[in-house]
Image (cartoon, rainbow, N blue to C red; front, top):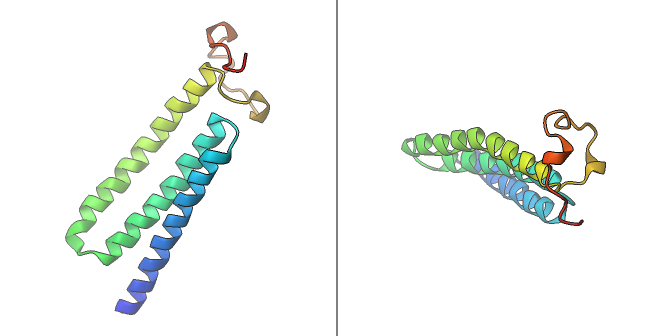
Length: 120
């Protein structure tokens, strides 16, 4: 049973590290703030959860509670942070409007309240 646990843990740790690596590549390569935010929020969170689960499988059960709290904290804060960063990017015109399929904030944030684009 220990060999199976070690293999599952190793797969989770390596998979989580790969997701974290892909998230960092996405943050560096994507063109605007919204795309970068997507890479950071989705892939990084999944990678971190996989790493925490792999670590929980390798450690004593008493460490499961702190690891679960870290996972819960990440799951609660990532959407809030993403919302704040996304709205800030929208208001400061730091995103490519060509990449938007629908502009849901156009009714809530009139053009005169948006800051000029840094490229202007």
